Structure formats: structure tokens, C-alpha cells
Length: 210
Image (cartoon, rainbow, N blue to C red; front, side, top):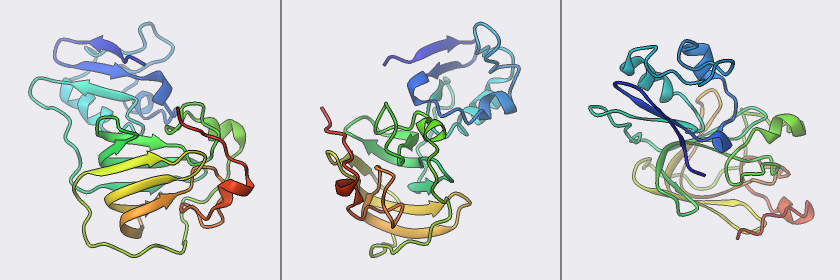
């Protein structure tokens, strides 16, 4: 899906509706710029470009992005995946998902209900998904490195295979594990969340991948 663009004098904001998880950061922090009750709902000239860029960087899903002549968005030097309470995996870093270009921010489905897999589309809320954001799972071997490129690829009808240096953290920032490879649950049924334990087979999870 092509991103919708909202061009201002000093900054251009882009938006991908299918990636939005309705965190409402944009409206709560800059309602004069991001107001769904207005048309167009994005008004990039209603605040300083630096203020808008700072807010866009807090969009967890990457649904919002920006272009600005003197300040491109930087990829974080530490790759991290945060486990959100009753919600998705919030990814930040040099992570390439399903062969797409690396993005600074993404939210990946872990409830199994998204209609836009591997990305979260907020279906966990309507589906009543419940899973702690403060897990204490059995973890894989740890790695001391947390930077460099990472790939996250769906396995058909199975977990998300993450390869590369990444730190897995709870929703409040507590470290769970530093990994160079992991298989993360995306069916919502694992008893060792956020890791896969094979439960997708009994749950008959289906995501064949085109």
C-alpha cells in the first residue's frame, strides 16, 4: 500500500493506515497537527518541523514517518523488541521484515488475529487477546551484541524467525534476553510467550504466506 503524503513547508509526513495500531501518540502529543476529526487530519504547518519529527519518532508502528531535508530519521544503534501488554511486539532497530527495507519502527502481530500479517492491525483489542507484557520465559542462549542488521521472517503457519543481534525487553524496558537468533510466537497460543513452543500446530494456526 502506498503511503499517504502530507506536505508542509519544512516537513513531509507520510502515513500508512494499515500499519496504524491506534496508540494515539500523535493526537495526544500534537493535536494541532494530528486531529482525526479534521480534514485533512494531518496539518504539517501547525507546529515546528523539529517538534513534529520528534513526535513521529514515538509512533511505535512506523505508520507515521517523515521526510525533512536536514534531519532524516536514524536507525537506532541497539536493536530491541518490546513485548507489549495484551498487544504486539514493538520493534526498533535495523530490522528487515519479510524481505522489506529495514525500518526504524514496526509493530508485529503476536496474537495471530491481524489481517495484515506480519504487522499488527489492532485486532488484538477486538479479539480480546491477553498476554503479559512482563513475561519471565525460558530463554535461549544470550549474546553480548545488540547492533547490526536483523532479519525477521515469517515461517509459514508458524513462528517469526529472528536472526541477528537483538535485545528482547518487557513493555516497561526490563531485559529478557540478548539474542542472535530466536523463534517468536505469532499464533497467540504459546505457553512460553514471547517464544514459540510449537503450540501453533495444536492451535491449527494458518498463515501460509504467499
